[in-house]
Length: 432
Image 1: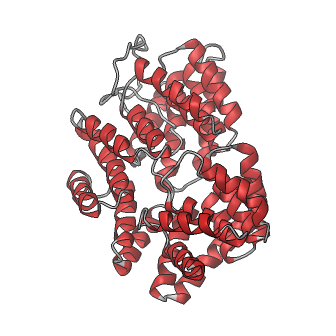
Image 2: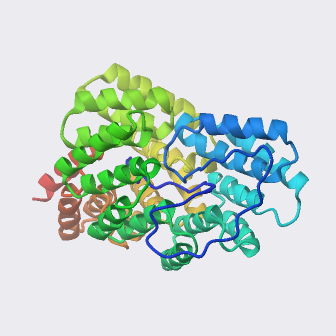
Image 3: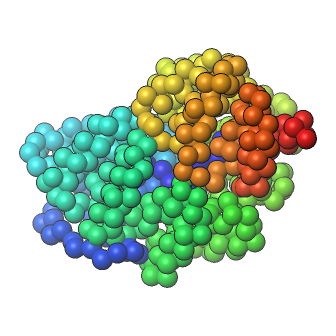
């Protein structure tokens, strides 16, 4: 299922721009011999291979530089988003440990990296505690501020999310804060304000930030049904960076929204070649089914089932797309166990939607009502959330509500998997 572009922010920001507030800056770290002048922006999808090589070279030359070890840990975690190489998490853990061995006290960078790693494991309560510990030492640390926002968001504490955003914007405004403001507005159904925030940041963004912001704005425009604007924005990203992975994913979803399924399949294949993440395999499977490429769809399904079979419920719950796939295509009981586990870890709207849908798929639609209502409690304009709600309401005989919510869901983002739209249309015809 489609995910929002915004992901957990694991970052070190050594330079920030494009803020929407006025920040007081913390005093810069003293210069460190051998440490490269690098900038890692949260979740921006850049390939950090060269940055990691610089940092690794730096710690080889100056092995007692605890700050660079911590920066390297953050770079490893961020690189997993692009490469899909989860072995980098072990290297990140080792880098954090090394940083703390060198500097066990008041090590802001290592505490921040630890928060990032805890978030990767969906231990958001402890991730928040680690970020708070880092901020107790340096209240202006950019990465710790962003990680704190992300942990609060994943825990479903949406009032606190806005407070944390305002704090971060006062202290360290930048692209990471802008992205999170846009996501907060979108969660609450205020698409126009989300787009406005992103456009405002673009007016002063440096070149390195433009691809990230343009892609975020393109996704907002697509979810608003403005496909022409989406195409133009993604065209600008291609001129800036033809290999930018998030924009390639956004183009694939745009082509799905436009009904250009063959080209969407080509784009998803390119995405999977570069980043073999399980959620990308789910999207590729969906498009193969639409095209009638049943053999290729079966191959993707086999990969996903094999992947799920190696995971505990807690591990599978971290991949909600795969948990939903198991509910829809393979074993709904496995999907339910994963969704239950994830709901224990976080209480945000994506986890509520997954648990509601998983309960529905095992025939417990009455129980599912509570969670599907929680998933839509903010008015989030996510087509899948509303289609799921309508289908669950249909199953329990709430015909009027089901009609209303199915129609609303079908009027939203056309870039979602076609199977969701087909099921919604079939249910709506039955209700009529």
